[in-house]
Image 1: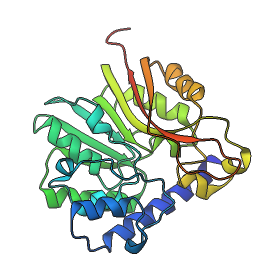
Image 2: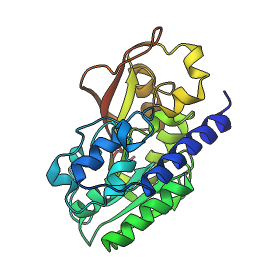
Image 3: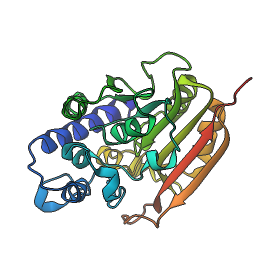
Length: 265
């Protein structure tokens, strides 16, 4: 599949998810969290790769229910990033805004968070959620994670939640993340990784791309993208066991990835 075809299909699927969320009537944060995991009675798309139990109840307090339900993440990058007051954060593929809102709490009013997403419906949902929260240190910007619309050295931390695996050009994603980080900045992302080569039949299936399957890469390839971009002190740790898979597919696992940009040089 061509890169633009993959992006179009992913954009359409996640736009549909945002529209579904906008029509939901949810009762509690835990109900919303179940919905994000594809609960059938909520009518959500089950194939977009969401995991359950990513956020604890306390994390979700005050977060709009639509932001929780829109999440199709595989981890909780803000819990891993050790965010500090005053830090500047970029969320690659920010969706309905859940990780941006969690990050905004941690960096406080002297810091700020920028969410970049290519899906207009997700951006509209995220901005609606931000307005509902009355939060002033979060901004949502339309753009591609392969071509981030921010200047060089603009942020201290880059986070992302099960989005890099959706990109057909991971070298560009790594290079852009490195470019927008200030010297000494860090990358903290949750993502999906394959424990073996992905057969071409899955690479050519657009639904598998949108479901966080076809774009999953092996660790050696993931490392190569980050190293080529200039990142150092890279760590990749598996979180949990393999996901359910189809015949002929390698095991797919969620991972947390940490990497740094040198302070100088």
